[in-house]
Image (tube, rainbow, N blue to C red; front, side, top):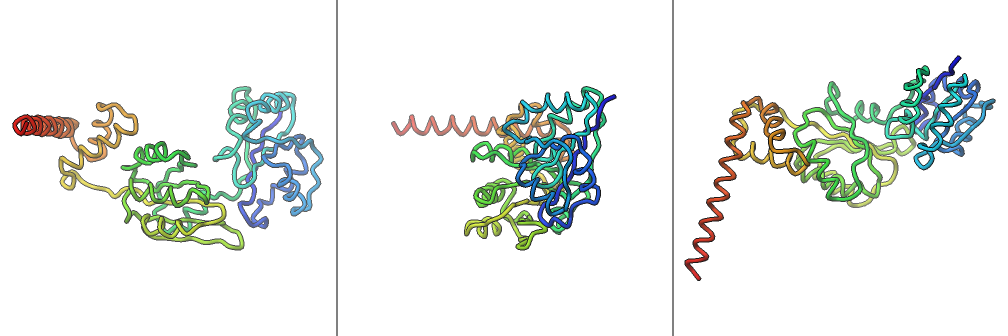
Length: 296
């Protein structure tokens, strides 16, 4: 008889937000896999719980190596509880590998729902929440970060990101460059904690504010791209959108198809705009060469 993998949400700030079932699961688990065993100890003390099971560390550095061990324990009938430092395991936290291994072995996977920085930030942002996508942490290198943001340049759903405080100003500046300085956003800092702050405004304004230095755990919520109809997109804008996608790594054919779908236009119309722009650039380059030869 196989065991059960339990993913448990933990408080993102205020320990009083711990779900009622969390204490019971901590007390009953055969094995507790914790991202940080010291933080787990503080949590169990705050909840007045004495775990009876074995406690092991399970973090980014040992996740790949420890997953088979935990999967074997599950196959042997153990109830394994996975907790991360804050929020739900697997969401920008360790957990995905163990869930995948458990599913592959036919082991039951369940969860103790709990606090989520993603949903909390969305709820307080003041931005549309009917459709959204979670982008996690952006790449640390500037060029890779810009490329990732360009992939989302036309995304109409509200975007949610995690970011480190010391990179926040650079990230917001990059977002302002790609999405536009006036695009609405909210920077949610230290959610549910003593110094909780939600700063709302345009990306350019928020980037200037963050340049002064920001501390704490950060979640950034960004308004999706505005909806535009075919009449609002001229040929130059269609070409610009295709190039943004090409710079992000898409082949031209796929980029044209995606831009056409977003704009509600026939692919042929976007293709013609791209070809016309390419011909115009070629002709301009040829004329410049002739002028230079004539002057020589």
